Image 1: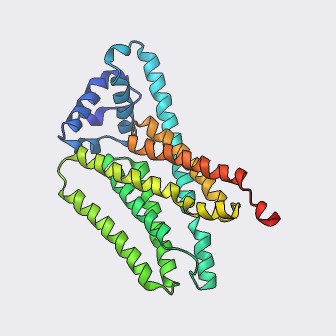
Image 2: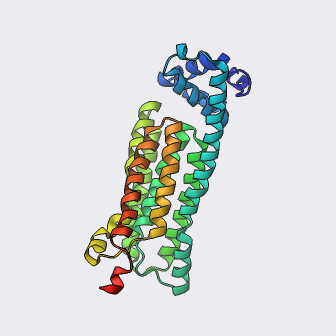
Image 3: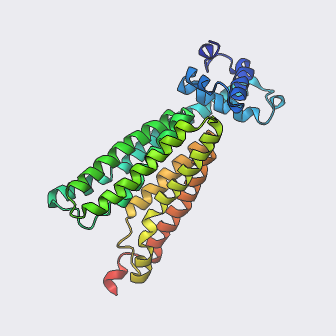
Length: 284
């Protein structure tokens, strides 16, 4: 009942101890469902308060300045989450032209099912992470991403001649998602489960960022970036930078670390376009 009375605009310092008590309950693995009582804005506010409280209550001497700073951080966090949502969903939509081409040619020859399946598994894992953490931004993005990847996979499957290989990849993806769901059903410690799932998501995220490097050997051999998708590399940099900032603001290492690695990988991929420009292939 107390949580429902909390508002951001009414003297947030009065509720510092209440929020700290809520986080104490969460850290003690008790009543973690209390977070459902908070709205999305209140939960973000609680995260920011918890971050400030880690430095000690003694530092909160200027209440007005603290309230102004917190309000600005919340506004920036909201804008960043909206921007990251649109840019990430935009990146998920790059599969539409490929599917149109497959339908037009009535063949999926030359298109690997692995990236679609891997992205679907990654979205499913992040979706579960978002549900456990009560982060609506992560839930929304990965729900949309998962649905899109499944649709892309269905188009690929319906126009493929190598059904057995696609069945194998599909089976591996289903088993991975089923194993995760079983683990979540059997786990009893919320914090441990969240941390373990975060580590899994971290690995999957890094693998997705590194996927364009699969053609690195061909790029070095031909001294041309013809086979490296420039729009995807640029999109990876933009999306990774936005999610790194988001992870920084909500103090989530499982969002910060993979996207920091993603920024480094994207910069490396883009640097290859200066080292091996596409035009060299024509002059060779």
